[in-house]
Length: 331
DNA sequence: AATGACATCAACCGCCTCAAG
DNA sequence: TCTTGAGGCGGTTGATGTCAT
Image (cartoon, rainbow, N blue to C red):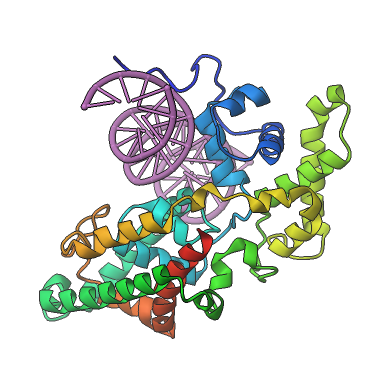
């Protein structure tokens, strides 16, 4: 017996979300909190599948989401975590709470894959002795590097799980980057207006000036979206400035910030299980894309260099310490 | 200016996990 | 123990934007 569809496919609307739909979803979640997604379309009157509502919330409307281009640090974190965890985007995203798994996945597929490929080609080009890069790096070397990596990760993990290093979060200069709610105003200059902010302002505006129901249906979304964009651009501060968000929406959106983001649902137990699973399975790391491949990843000398050079050796360490600690702090 | 190729990313699909009954 | 269904996840698609010719 096949499973019934999660939604009545006939009456379900597909495609891009409209501002009005966003408002309805956000206002409902603000009132009831995220969860029980099945009831969301019913209670909001949205002609959307519950999954679609959840996805829209977690990937787009949820507060604290950082949008726009990835920083080099984030790139390196993703590459490193991908090497450790494989294509487990949700797990990777748990270390970058400002980014959604979808965002990371997209970024990996559209940017980082190419970047790594290019680096790999560069490495091959540099091998002038006729040997392939995979031949030029002995398996022993790789195992040692892997062991070092695993050792570092394990150590960081055990430290993080011991919960006696609360300061590791604040000590890390990078931590603020990874924790949206502890970052009052990181000047991450971005011209991209976070839609979460827009929706937040939009909703705030909407709540302050509840339109009459009839007019609202047609005009509110459009005009308030405009307002929100205007606010965003005229507020003076960076449009991506989380501080601006909390300042302008603190009354209306305090409750938002008490939510556990669904993206952070990965408990540290499960994360550690993830890591342990990977770290203790000798050949599970670097196997293929989803199961990283030792062979395929061999020409990483340049990539590693890129990951580790110009002070990023510290990043490398920070990454593991910070991100694992980060996870513990979050959960 | 037109158009075709390529890039990006929001959203969908289908499978998996796990808790509740 | 088995069944059911909600929620979660990763892979993929398709609409849209951008660039090159």
